[in-house]
Length: 68
Image 1 (cartoon, rainbow, N blue to C red):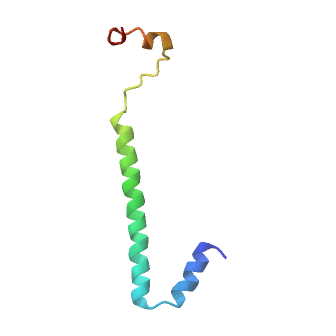
Image 2: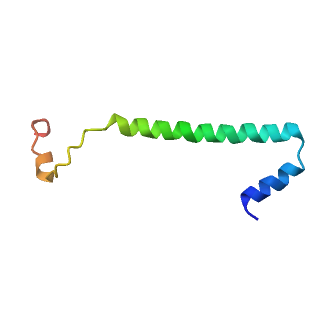
């Protein structure tokens, strides 16, 4: 029996108030997932356009005035 079937079986034995609590929790989990996805996207958006696709050479990284 999968999780969906198990939840359906449990809900058959619950009162309406308990089912409402389960629904609230499921909606909370979906909102949490959407919020985490938006935060991850915002992090990536912060660095968008910084890489121009040009291959870099390691030697060039150490040939900067600030490192001398």
